Amino acid sequence: MENKTQEEGSTINVSSLACIDLANSNLHQSAASLKQACLDCGFFYVTNHGINEELKDEAFEQSKKFFALPLDEKMKVLKNEKHQGYSPVLSQISDNQIHGDYKESFFIGIKGSNDTPFCRANIWPNPDVLSGWQATMEKYHQEALRVCKAIARVLALALNVDGDYFDTPEMLGNPLTFMRLLHYEGMSDPSKGIYGCGPHSDFGMMTLLGTDSVMGLQICKDRDVKPRKWEYIPSVKGAYIVNIGDLLERWSNGIFKSTLHRVLGNGQDRYSVSLLAKSIRVYLHKLFDMSTFRCGYCERSFNQMIAFFLQPSHDCIVECLPTCQSENNPPKYPAIKCSTYLTQRYQDSQVDLSMYKKT
Picture 1 (cartoon, rainbow, N blue to C red):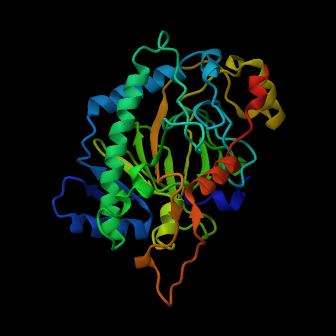
Picture 2: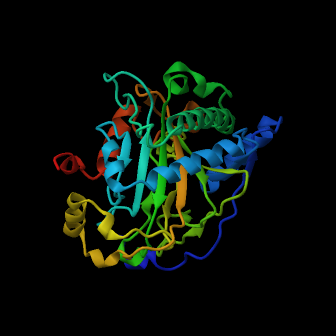
Picture 3: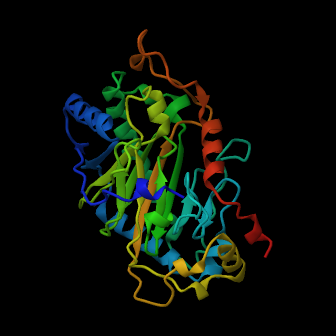
């Protein structure tokens, strides 16, 4: 569990992030602004991204419909070994946490054959239960990828390489793209290690984050300062939040920051523990005192996010960019294959759900 003195302290401020206009014809101006944002905290907003507001609203509405289903129905699409599908509450755990995250999620990956990492046909809810759900998510996935590739071109310029540097087949020509629908619940208490999503940095190249209006996302610009100082990231209407991940930090030789962030639940959305299937209820009791749950029925005010994760091709070798190293600043990280890195990070952060499939 996070040290109490580490996690208590300053969690009051609201962070002011740079805003990158993707319609700006002056790409070098945008690149300069983006570079400063990545040097500062690795989080920024993007506007004029081209994602239709009606599509975003529909994706959030369909996401809400899925999470409102009875647990038995959601468990029919329990995630597979490629991480695609449904993950129940407490099934993901961040570094230094004892308990898992108080969130449930649905993970949508890429299509492909079974002979490459992270590639398999997606798991979808029953169309008789959720009509149009798959089509909405596939369209949103396509649009989010388009936006991320546009951001990658500005990022390339910010790293002093050609704008199409990341467009090669071994990089973003055949990217690993994952979308995670997220639903947070309960009341967080960092002093007890209870989070909607515990402190972590993202694994990949970048994350495009669509949020609702419920405040909860926080960033820590300097993880080494004690106690850690956390700042809220507010939603901005019409904008998406973007953050760079660990792979881009490695590419940039640590110049760009993959920043620690977390989500705190505010108790707006609470489920009765009696709704949990027996196998999960037993599992939760083994993990910790169930009194930390706020039990009972209440009006369900959903706290949701849709995160889109962009990674390079699974066989891409991620190593320090030539513009980010010198004789006095040699590469800080060894070269690593993308799939090797991601596989290890996912294994470290996931609770084994095989017990559910035996019940």
